[in-house]
Length: 502
Image 1 (spheres, rainbow, N blue to C red):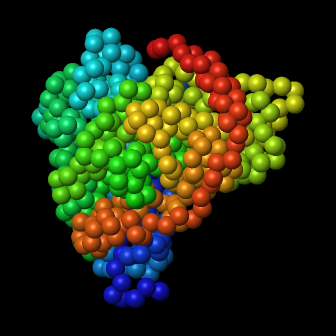
Image 2 (cartoon, one colour):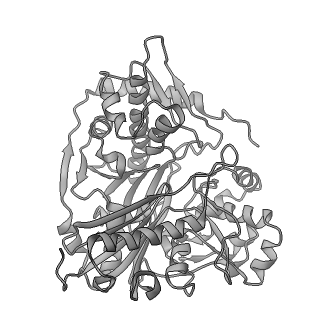
Image 3 (cartoon, rainbow, N blue to C red):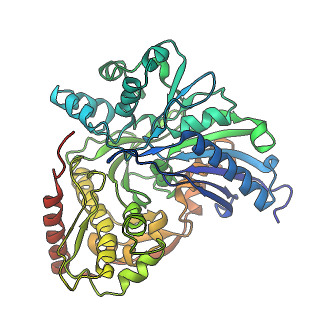
């Protein structure tokens, strides 16, 4: 049992498939975890939605559960931090706090046509220059436009200040604060297509292009600071809400990638490779994203990012869509039962392809099947596809940065898969390092909150807390690596532009 004087940070990690709450102590160790899955809704092909009310209720439930189960009263919390699935879009009524529609999830492709129209009108360069992003349905701005276009009377109500827009961080902060604070941080604002990452403010010209009333937008605050107060009714006493970051930026912070050139890859529902580029955004020449990492004490750190839409979700598809496995944990054993992929390649473009292709019309495909192909070969191809996509990102990132990576820090659920991590190291030709605490998304949110309230003194203390659990060294011959990549690229090329634009 913890002592009555010990203090803790509560991290709320709201992800695509679940809401979690994790307690961290001063050593950066996990002292309690509670988790609850959330429902996925697929009303049409390519559409993905969440119930925003369920997100709030599940996040509050796990926050209360982790305190109860660990025997820690809310009075021993130094602060609360939020890490959230990014780009997922909520529109709600300020008076009632009720959403007007299900949340449109980052994976949702319904606004690809809007992006095509903006691109055809010549606006893509402006969006890229101001936001660091490509015009893609992945981001929040076109999702918000779709909601305003399709909910009767919504745009008029928005202009009158009756409605609020937010990504999941804003939605949670609104409710946690007792509906008093409508805020977001730059790491989340930078994912909306509405935020100028250079001036670090909402951009009126981009808002006008998407016909979005500025009255909808949250106030931008630092990622680490006195952001709001968690209302006493939720946890039993008032607690500072002192940290907010999008999940991938939070994971980068939690991985202590705090110096220029350091990089991490998170293997979650998607895969997200991010490299610290310092105090200035780096313009990508290979269709990667320039984005805000975090903002502390008015100082902004930028990242270069590549996104894979189907990472761990590929394994979920094997389980839920094909029924090849009964639990995600089984995939490693099944894949390891064969010595190689048997010539089978899976391109998991179920929701299109992200960087560096950015093809919303790409679709998932299996290539190289023979009568000798088994479900084990498909399982291995699925794991290898996760690594291949991440390797494509790193190759583009190294070209942009003009320097090779010395190591890749990894986290997320699939990072516990030793077969996948070894194959990733073999493909990259650099060590892959898994930390002792793999819950780095939650840890990053905790660190941002803890720094704000003096729980930890400075970033140097956080760097000292980070410890490696295992280091995977590359061992694949270059000829074998080149052959595998060649076949992978051939498979990807055949999956591109498969679907007919709506």
